Length: 323
Image 1 (cartoon, rainbow, N blue to C red):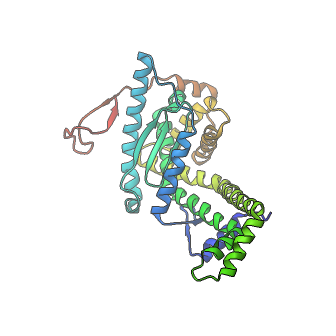
Image 2: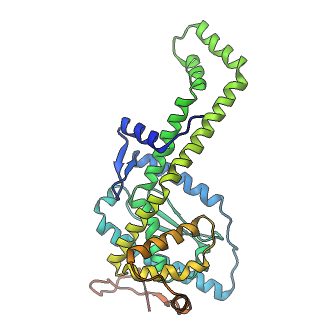
Image 3: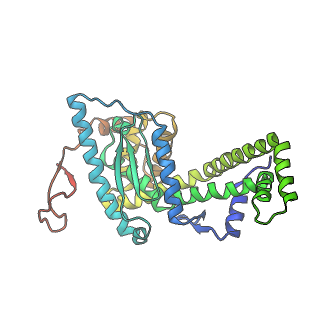
C-alpha cells in the first residue's frame, strides 16, 4: 500500500489552492471556517465522550477548592481573551469570543474547537497549578485556535480522504456507473454484476480506503503536531507577556509541576511545552528546592470584585481578582 506522506498532501493542497502560512511561516492546509468549526466540534465531543468522568461527589473542602479553581479559570480566561483580541485583531472575523468550560473529567487535560470553545478537564485541578502555569495552559489551548490548527487538521483529514479514494478508486467507479443519469441498461447491469460477483472484494477495497484515510491523516497530523505545539507555546507566551507574565516566571511555574505529570498524552505534551518555555526564557532550569517552594506556597484567595480595571468604576460581573 502506498504511503500517504505529508509532502503528497502539501502538493495536493497547492494544486487545490488550499494552502496558507502558519504563524511560524510553515505551509499550512486550510478549509473554510464553517467546515473546520463543524469537524472540530465533532472531534472535541468525541474526545469528551471517550474520556472517563470524574467522581461527581465532593467533600466540603474539596468542593470549595473546585469552586476556587473554576473562578480562576473564569478570571484568567477573560483576561487572556481580552489580550488575544488586542494582539490578533483579525481573530474576531473568525470567532466572536472565547468560551471557557470545565468538563468533569477525571484526568488532566484541555481541548478546544475552531469556534473558540476551550475546555479544561476537572482532573487538571489535581496539578495545583499556580496562576502563571494555569494561564499558560489556557493560553496554549487558545493558541491552537489562533494559529488555525483545527482548520489545518480538518483540511488534512479531508485531503487525505481524497487521496485514499484516488489510491483505491474501484468502489467509486462501480457506484458511479450505476448512478450516472441515462446510462445504458447494459452498463448498469455490468456495474450491478460486477458489484454482486465481487462484493467481497469491493467491501475490502472500501475498508482499505477508509483505513488508509484514517491512518494517513493521523500520521500526517502527528508529523506536524510538534510544530503546532511550539506555535501554540509561542502564542501563549506572547499573550502572557501582555498580561505581565515574563517567560522566566512561566518557566518556573511549569517546571514546578513537572514532577506531577505522568507519561500519558496531554501531560507529556505539557512537559514538552515546559522545556520549550525554559529554552525561550534561557534561564537555569528550576532546582528541586525552588520547585518545592512554588508548590507549597498558598494559592491566592479569589473573589469577584466589581469594577472596571482601567477606571475603577464599579461594574457588576467583572473578572475575579487575586486577593
